[in-house]
Length: 424
Ligand code: GDP
Image (cartoon, rainbow, N blue to C red; front, side, top):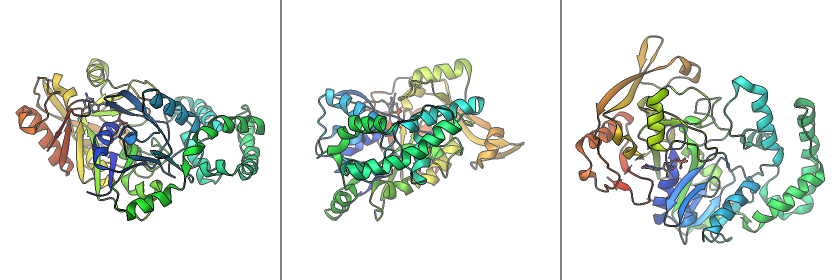
């Protein structure tokens, strides 16, 4: 296995962080290729429990080089908070083990303001943004109206570039939203405070990756969120504003010539979803409460209770296809241990017709889940590390999901800790 991507198959929060943390032992370089600080990976290891938002999950492995690629929304303020947290727990961050692409664009304070202003304007029709500025950031990037991290190394160029953008941005803040505008001094003070902190880590990560590839190094690329939140292939407009799918990894990493040999798709043994948008399998009331509690389903970034429901085989099969997954990690199987019968959404019913194909987003609000049940196992499986030792009912569940989604399940995770994993 050479290059590998670890991606989400569903709506995010599938447990990608724990899989990257586990698999980095076989890799030399870990790269985040999209998104910003708007979601979180939770990693539990011998140093403690960490909620990573921007830092690649390989940061805990000695000898691994971690890269924030050009596709990332570089929020230096949040990154610095996160770096301090990690460093306070004895994890060394140096320009040797953390590199920031000079080509990633900077998420600026007004992106966060605009995100909140627009969500407020939308009121009852909001998209469920985490208000981290991601949508305004990517809009600006594609409009060529933000600055790149590498410009921090060229202060005069940066200042004059920012002055041009500031004039335009203040027009939007003032005339569209009647909101507070920025002065050049304010924005330079922010750059001085947080841009300076990340400056030592900025370099030409594309050149580094090309050399690493030539030297035969093993490269792992890490996504945020999941296939159903991908800007082009997800449940638009309730998607994120970047491409979370593996096909974007070479572009967003800084290694456009890379071939991804293995795509490990992470699937949760049930469904969860944060924020707004259609969620066909959603449970409500006591049933939802029990699953949410069992799975600890509260957002890593926002603490928001996640929406939960049974595994959605229709959406998961679509996610597997979209990600071109070659191997699946099924996580949180242990969470289902309390159930007498395990529910699975096997098809959707739309306008009285059953289908096993994931529909166009406009049809999703009408879709109803067709649910079937399998026997539960009703015992603690969290210490099990061998496939044969899993109760027969749990194995049957995994095998059924595997057959339904059309991809091998090579990893079954039964707990958040690094070792709570069954390799098949
Ligand atoms: P990510 O963004 O895809 O990395 O997912 P999150 O970190 O938001 O959510 C995964 C959560 O589930 C984290 O709190 C993990 O520690 C936890 N977790 C991951 N795998 C397992 C598992 O197999 N069992 C249990 N009980 N928890 C898990």
